[in-house]
Image (cartoon, rainbow, N blue to C red):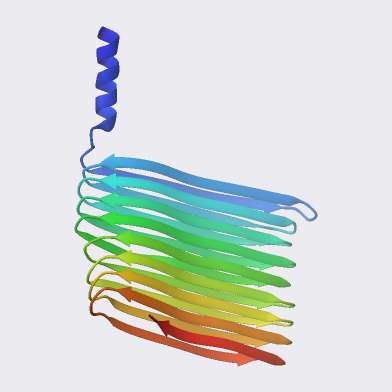
Length: 297
């Protein structure tokens, strides 16, 4: 019986919410590769938290260089449940040089708050490669708040120089809250000797009244060969009186073919609301094809 009581007491302590829970996770690492060799680096922060007021901060910083191939990967994962307020901050910074370079960075968070939720996520990447530079970055957030959701930032910043460059960056957000603020930004820039590809996306599903949503996609590239630029802002709002702004800027210079596919898409299911959509482009190439649209439903 004594052992049973001890086990029950331990379980009760595990499921009892902790007041004022504050957790910080940080990783700093570096890597190098000699000529003809390959170096790989992977870093991960993972946390599952439950308490009255909960704060989680996760950060990963990676640096690398050398004359060989360099591959790095970083992931922050947070699962936070708070009876009161929840605060989550996640960041990834990657900076590498090499022959062939690959960067993968991601933040993922699932946040449930009985009162207010405040979140920020950011991935920043820079790469310089003699050969190909491949970058993938993303932020994913699921948020359910009882009173207010301040999702002040999902940010992806990517810069690369290489013989060939491919960039894929995006933000995904799903939010359920009485009201709140959402900001999503994707910034991609590249210089390539041959071909280059940009893909930038902001997607938001917001289930709240009086929501404020801002989305911005910015892409700029220069390629000696073909250049493909694809950017999209998409928001779907279930709720009354939302205020939404969407902005895309594309700038491209290609030695051969330049393709720009840029679109803002918004849909409101509810009463009232305000929407502003704007797209602007600058394009130079031997052949230029542009597909540009602002859509509302």
